[in-house]
Length: 303
Image 1: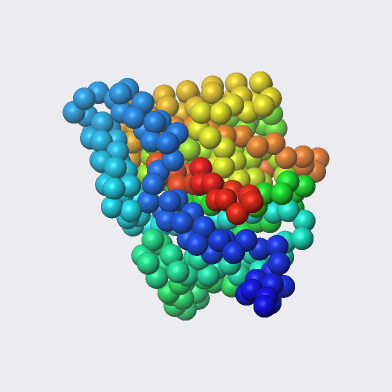
Image 2: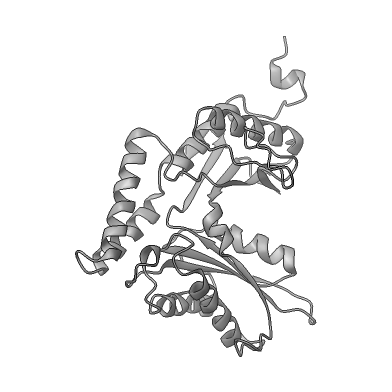
């Protein structure tokens, strides 16, 4: 007798995928990644004891601990689910999408996700975080590896609202088509965001591409670890230098002032048309929720 997956042509789909996806969503929503928590701890040590900045960071760290202990969402806004799926040849992306959507709906039913999908005109909430082909957002990539890897980012609306895209040259900022021009618009994005993005945040900066690909790349770099380095030394140096400059703006946690406005900057480079020079800045809040599921030989690994 054929099992359910074989009956529907899912012969390559792991039977454990549904439960593993639900656990991925639970872990992402309720447990801050270790590198992010460590960065918040380091930031706390740089702020003056008793200051508004240290108080805000203390609250974030307490919230992180309680969310982990109680398996409850880190933030009331559980955000937009962004899935990045890398799959071996032979997998049906249609079936993978179906499994992901079922897991999202079940996670919403269990209050691991807040119902966040509303119609753009009527405002009607679907109640299950599903909204056509664009919600949840799923990116598929085929690989020669035999593992199925699914990365999930939960991106809140507050930090999404303060993202920005610039077209160089920008006369108002005296930003030309060069790295100093990129630096100027990146720092402007941080300054314009102030505390509205729930600082301390992380920036994803895409240099080049078209309007759509630049936005996509600026979010995909959030899959990187906070403590990693860009493989190109001169780009890694820019990430470090621009981070230091941003933290000199004095905006601080939640906009209360202080030394920690950002926890990190991650840069992506995209080839562009000669006529266009876009710089896109995506902002991630302190609740930097991202996790990875790897399924190989019937074993599920979460990281």
